[in-house]
Length: 303
Image (cartoon, rainbow, N blue to C red; front, side, top):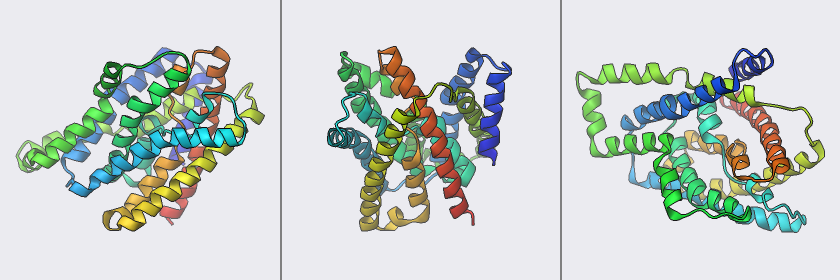
């Protein structure tokens, strides 16, 4: 219910012109540059990071990057010629949706596994995904641009810094010092509105007018097929590994990641206006399906 309410508030803000597009972009920048990175830093510097958890980022790097090639194979099978189509079948919008949904369901204090998965995903996006999207569009991404993209991602910086604090013991020292409660209180206060603001922004950006439903349904069906394949691969791996990888929290984290829509940045790298608008609409529709999937997951987890 909180998810639907915040999305509706975002839509009302757009329809009633209560917030301008510049205002929404400002709210998005606030979340992505401050509240979300600080929330993740606070979570990670207090967490106990084990060596075997490196499997999480490795797995989702492989799932995201490998998903491009799986998508191309599936596109050949259905004779889909659009070069951008395979990129709708992989990648996950964790930053602008996943963290918000996870926080609502289980709380940000349990987000460690999900965020570790996102590290691998983000690295794949900036090193493989964006480079290949640009390539099919006739441009190329240099190694320097890829590194700059990674180093200028506040969410990733927040996670990595928190991990470093945890591994070195600096996080534990801060937590047990007299400054610990003060720092914790500040971080919690800053992070508190993150989920709500993200959902308002998403609701504001949702448009369902003039949508090519027949063509978009093809995108949705093919992505669902590929995500079932990826889910089977991920859960099979986690089952074999056992331990932390078979824990309920890990499985829920993976499910939330897999049901997310394609990256919201995809249309930004598409040059043709018509295709840019089509894929923006497709992502909006899939976002609604992701939220429905999240509500079903919540009903199962919280029953």
